[in-house]
Image: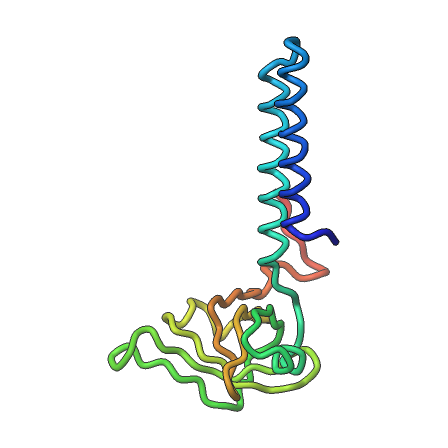
Length: 155
């Protein structure tokens, strides 16, 4: 995949050609320049989003790439201690999670405990491995479904 620098060089050559053609050809309209600038901005926005995209992995892959951000899907380990004491520190929450491959890690989240955390079926944590722990920057919960397969409410 071409790098961002290659795109910028391409865009600058296109724009340089546009201005050179404009001097030669007075029929060049401003709308052409505006369209080229919009396309250049769109390419830049897409490239910046592509570079920041994190991937869904398990704890073992995240441990191999310490410091890189990942999404990890798993379940709360109800047998291990969950710690949240808002009187001591309202922005410290820790728990143990088991990923989809069965590996367990302690997760530290520097925000309050999410509502209905205990009731969630699955947890998606976004963050990085720091030493032995997973430092989560976001916690996304998949709450239990309101409906079952046999019983669907109709409006």
